[in-house]
Length: 469
Ligand SMILES: *Cc1c(COP(=O)(O)O)cnc(C)c1O
Image (cartoon, rainbow, N blue to C red; front, side, top):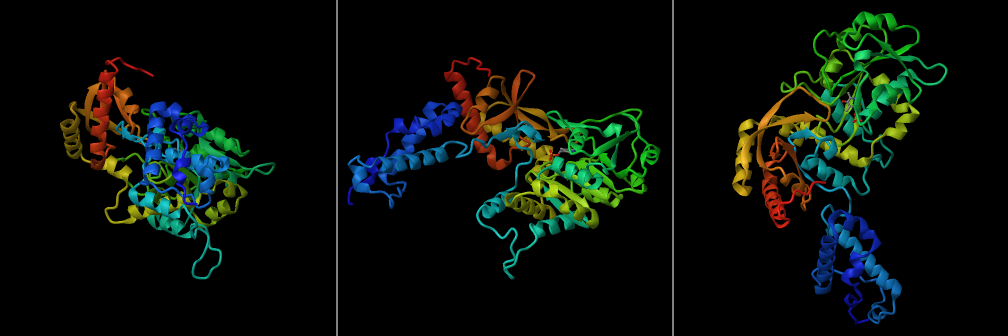
């Protein structure tokens, strides 16, 4: 068994032509995959990367007789190539957000902070998510995260589900019930919103069989509209924060405090998950104030202004939250251990004095700091420093301007930037590509500058033809 197993390694072309790499070839081009395969094989041959052959008959391999062994080696090499390619083994590729939109839905909304990423990695293996290490008994799932949610918001009780839509569906379904003795949920006509990609909240609620009773008009709904509608069949009143649009002019809406005088539970979907009031976003409701105003249940997203992982939060009365937790639907909507870990780390960032998340940093960064960042990028990679207006995004605070800075380049650069090793998603505006630096922390600037230079070179070698796609 002294022969060298490395001689049984597959040829570069066999690796690059493997069906498991076809998607990577389509995404990155054959040259990139061949180059990665060549590198992985070279490292294995030179011994720079270890080759685990304990379970292989190396003598047979050497003689080319062990077909199964050769396949095992091919499997291992393919796995390593997948890992070595940009984006790793997943087809989700990390990108740099140069759009100036803090919560960019197409770019995964809130980027997690370093402590949340570490917490997810730590929780990825076996973990004590439902286990008490002291007594050895089963424990309540994610009990400590829920405790942190309570202390961050002052809520009596809390529950975590898969996303904001799930939180809303669970709250309305559990309270309204379905079937013959289902009751009604009263909603203002001014709050029957579509949240994006064709998702309409009323349709979502009705899809479970719950009944909606519409009150008021598009622009005006008063407390008396609710009072007249609330009757024996009413199980709850739902107030939805119309986060992605504003109605201006002759408008009226009942406040949470007014609704709290009604003899039925009040559910408020605040959308963005701001835990406490933020002076930068005066029209954005927050969990703590909404509960204080008298809401019985507040629902929101975890990956918008809260800055955590995708999740839905339900906060409020202990009795109602317990009803939701016992509802059969809850089991289908609950979050996994990775979400619990990331949420807890995010909440602990919030609870620290002066604690921040990548989302709050991108929102609150001063114009002066952004100017310095843009100057530095221009010094490293050229371009013209320009004013650039950012946005909150994620359907939050549509009217709030976020004045900042960026660096402007040729319009064609945007496409080349998206095709780089680390794609940079910039804005195209007024015939130019603007790299807005709001969501590009200082630590990423060298990477961004590299990407800009690389994209510029690619444009020149491609003859400056605009390759629109
Ligand atoms: C975003 C939003 C939702 C949906 O939350 P997801 O986390 O995207 O499921 C529901 N209601 C409002 C008001 C929202 O802004």
